Amino acid sequence: QVQLVESGGGLVQAGGSLRLSCAASGRTFGPMGWFRQAPGKAREFVGVISWSAGIVYYANAVKGRFTISRDIAKNTGYLEMNSLKPEDTAVYYCAAMIAGGSWPPIREYDYQLWGQGTQVTVSS
Image 1 (tube, rainbow, N blue to C red):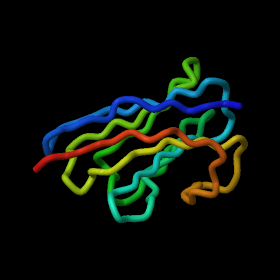
Image 2: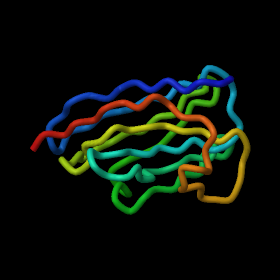
Image 3: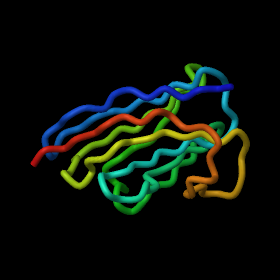
Image 4: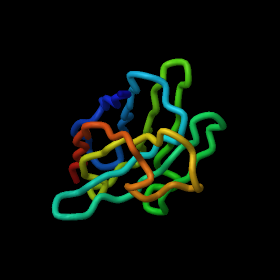
């Protein structure tokens, strides 16, 4: 069973940057997505990258500030977050699809593998 391990969360001031990593213990074939969940709110879609072609799709709330990339050789995905705002505070999760499907996969149930989550806190 492939596992996803996240790293890179932390505390940052508004306007700052963080980069999250999501390392897969084995090869995954489908897209890798990122979600976040703020306290008292539902988990929401952040963005996704198709693993082979590197095509990306972002939620409107992060478009222009966040960048998703991947390193196929390292089986690792990245979420680069810039111009962070206090409302970006949440637990961030990476997720992977075992196989491809409809595009873009923005629903939680599109994904079969999930990371453990990492806390991102943006202070004002």
